[in-house]
Length: 181
Image (cartoon, rainbow, N blue to C red; front, top):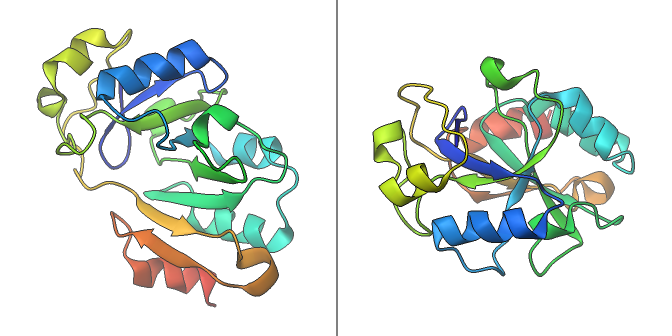
C-alpha cells in the first residue's frame, strides 16, 4: 500500500496473475474490472509503450505526472492482466509522488479501498483487512482524497477526440487546456 497524489493505493506485479488475484481479493473487486498500470516517472512509461503516436505522447507529457489516469489504445495488448475484458485498452497512471519517483518498475494499481467503498485519504481510512493483508504499507500522511480524473484518449491520435470518463482531482477544464490548445 502506498500514498499516491490522490488517494492511497494498492499495487502489485502487473505480470503476476497470483498477485493480481490477491489484490482483487483484498479489495473484494470483481475480476473482470480493469485496473491501471502505474509508472512512477514519465520516461519509463513512454519507453514501455513505443507504439504510441506523437499526438498521444505530447498529451501524456502534458498531463503526467499528475492526478490523471489515461485510457489508451493498446494494439500490442501490453499488461493484459490490467486490461480486464478489453485488452485493446490500457489504463496508464503516473502520479506526482517524489518519494516513489525512483521506482523503476511498473505496477498494477487500484485504490486501497473495498470495491465501491470510500476513497482513503489517510492510512487510517484504509479498511483494516486491506492494511493487514498488504505486504508493505507506506504512510504518506493525509492525501487530497479525490481519485484521479480518467481521460479517454483512445481516439485522440487519429481524430483529436477525448473525453473525461470520471471527474476527479484534475478539473476537465485543465485537461482541456492541454488537449485543446
